[in-house]
Image 1 (cartoon, rainbow, N blue to C red):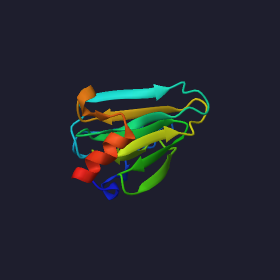
Image 2 (image 1 turned 120 degrees about the vertical axis):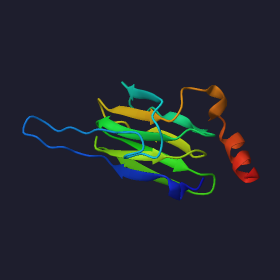
Image 3 (image 1 turned 45 degrees about the horizontal axis):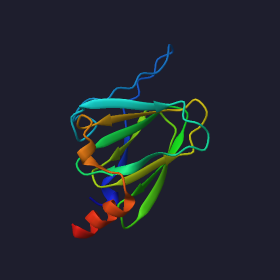
Length: 136
């Protein structure tokens, strides 16, 4: 899929003097059903996470706390996005390589995924990923 299919999604933000509330519902705000949720935290300074692509998985990535950068790559072009608001998610479609870095202290990165974990869905090698992009 082309990089242009990835996009920022504004999530509902309900403000209240007691604090804000944001929610995510399948197909209402995101183009897939949520089958798995996971999050990254306590990432050491200077570390890079992700470094992979998925064959079929769709994801919404949200900075629940703090901030980080995500570099997206469709095998032809790249784009860097800075996430730092818990009411904005980054939709990442299949066949997009991603690297996540520049984590602020105390940041939490949450990912909502369209399928349970399946190692066969991953490209762990950038060379294998770009070879598959070239075949499509």
